[in-house]
Image (cartoon, rainbow over all chains, first blue to last red; front, side, top):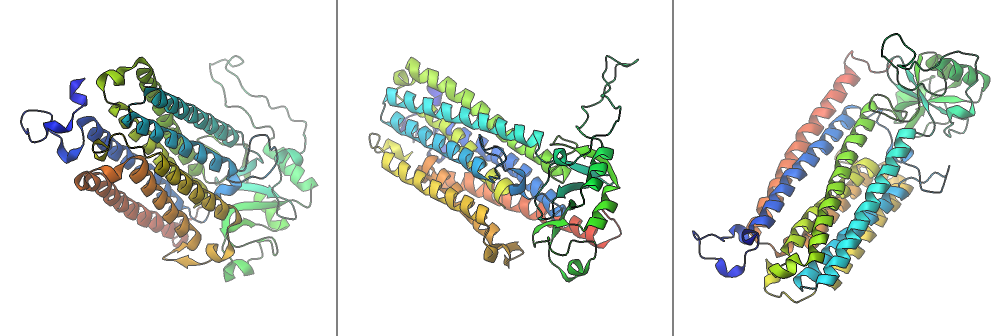
Length: 342
Length: 119
């Protein structure tokens, strides 16, 4: 491993090996350029998210209506608190990482090990939090109806507050069971059925005259929109989702083709299908980076415990894995902004 | 590698200060994101509302702090700084410019031409 640790006294010996372009050791510079390429990958994803969002700018879901959960606070509308907490956890694990690097410069083995351990714990908590966030996203909260054309209809009461399907859907005597491979003549099955059928939602909607439908479209308050008799006269607020009048709601719901609860790659109750796809893909890819970062950190942590870097008289390896770990934090800062804030 | 010159010096205090700055910036972001002041949301600058401008500027500031203080970019040579940060920033700006302009174009096609999305 002599090649990975170089000392300053070899500079000037250009052809004899140990030369350090740009004043950085081989391993560190390669980590920097790996980070450049990984940063470009992530920017590709985020820019693609931006592309799709600009393409459907009038119907894109509003993030703080989607991510509203916080552990142990059931039914409380807590936009962004949880993801802010996750951000803190990751920033804090970045701090412990840089403290480990700092302790490494002073050759304090125990301190390095301690801070590495804290970093690993922070990373694991973050990955766990992300899993919880995914669980909520996949499970959904309110449920919605998808029309034949693929747009999402959500339900609100007369104050404009969201209403769950479970709170109004009627129970009809319908006999529709999920087709499983074990029951068929051929080994085919179908995905899990939603709790309610479209007919049940429609019947329940008729029975509750206060309910209204909220579409994906974002209300801009233009003159054309103000004159539009299909839109609810009072409930619409600028830069919020459009609420329809009762008559128009009924007409719209007649187009319902599918009950959607939660999210998967094909349907989601939050609105644009691409929103869920990008959410899974980008946060998933980032979560994968955090996970591999934790694994690498564990390897380095064990090496610190074994005294490998004491023998080398250099903790540069901690510095290199630290670069990667900070990069993961850096990416999260951007994901946080573009998924949750903007 | 600046640390070679003063290998035994500890930067602990500086690290905690940067952590404080990052925390405060995050708190400000979350606070603004929750209350969404109407004066910022409803007023645009160059096609984007002021709140989003604030978010993006604060994010870039956080990214700068993480890269310079935590990743020790401040201790690297100018050539490495330019090779890493310059390349990334240039390519990312280029990519964002192309994709966002195109995305907006597709949006206008959906809006103004006969293709209708909602039925």
